[in-house]
Length: 335
Length: 138
Image 1 (cartoon, rainbow over the protein chains, first blue to last red):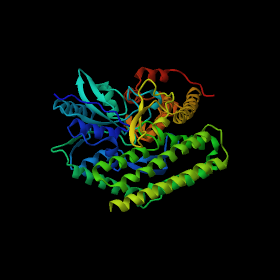
Image 2: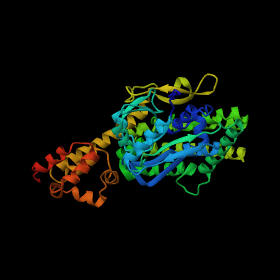
Image 3: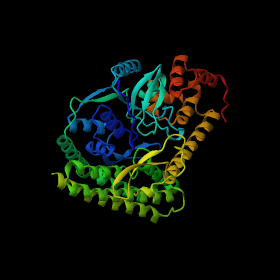
Image 4: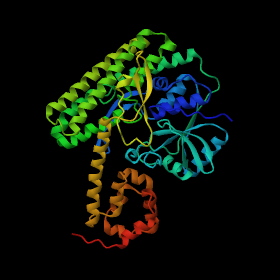
């Protein structure tokens, strides 16, 4: 029986994807490559939804897409299943484990026993790998953790059937790799990933998504102080900081992971122009982090004037321009 | 971000894990590295929790004053929305809203309380106990 190797990563879904590939003998796809091939970078602001009393903003694509797009772009088969009952879901998991396949599993974090309490929100798109069972304990490789861990049948069943937005419904998945993709296939997958990401960031006809979405949030921020008062407005900014920097983002709202992806793409594409755009995303990531510092000083009540909100908005407009330029460059390069 | 700029602040992740960040090394190449955390985002997390605790305290007051039932309080305490609670119990949102009324709550059957006990991950006895204690309206 082949030993499972735990690999830590910044983001759970990239991590599960890259780790499942690796443990199935396809070792080329690092976390940044998985992120880029899966067109993981995104921006969206959903104004009609509130999450934990704050704005609903995301710096990445819809959960589940990174894994799916990787398999599709690399020509790899997919096993994927959701379940109508926890009993059936557990049975299916046990059956897969008995076949010695490592299984990706979507879970909610609110009842995840090994997570620190401060991080337990009703967030249902966390991903981990179950790689074995000892008695009635599952062996779990959670990609954001340094070490593997154990979780009881009851606890796993509960988090697999967490309720609310993006409810996992016991979702299990793993790649079916018949033949390892060739370098040429990987190159093509990288190009497809970039192409799709440029399209998503530049051309979705909505002012709420992509680079235009960043501008939308910036405009909103200008009005928050008057509309919500400094305290609530500060909490809103705090929510942006968390979506942008919390564990799983790799820092700078996933922008550094994307920069690393473009850099690593060079081994396959040998295209200096594409890997050079990496610098733009480094700049964008740095700008997001500086913006977080500015937002934090408002949140803490140090700077609460309208001009401070305007400054944050101004920073975001600049980020919007950086990312717009960067994706326009990429789009022209991969046409 | 350069490797040496990667923050290593003390955070609630301390006894859990370090997280991976991507930063540039001296050869100007990206590499993954471990960070213990960053004060800026810890503060954001703490602020979010102080906001949540305010909500929980308000809900507790409503419970103690007999204005809302324990279902409402426990929903807020568990950071749930009506949709999430509806998901766990299988009750319609409008039904749950009715159960927020202390008078309606007192008459809830054991079968229904069982579902709430599951949703809140507490023994059903706690919910029954709430039914039996008298709450005076102010």
